[in-house]
Amino acid sequence: MSETIQWEYRIESFGTFFSSPKDEDMAEILNEWGEEGWEVVHVHSYPNTSKALVIAKRPLDLSTRRRRSMPR
Image 1 (cartoon, rainbow, N blue to C red):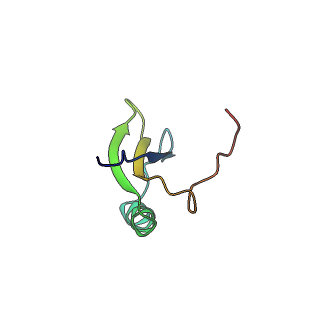
Image 2: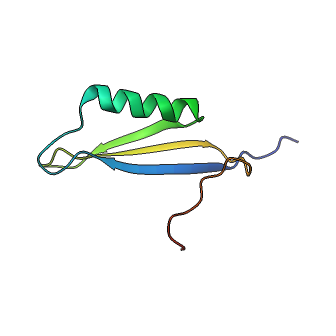
């Protein structure tokens, strides 16, 4: 029987209410994420703003797992 893959997720907002992120800055950030094994699975743009929420995932690996910045 195959083992179930566990995922870890990364969620970050980019841009501000008035200013969207520059394409080249986003490409640089997303390329860094890709090198770390992250795959973008969803991008949400907030209505009436220039902000975007990016959700990425990668297989859970306890040796590279991101630490939470705040406890649950």
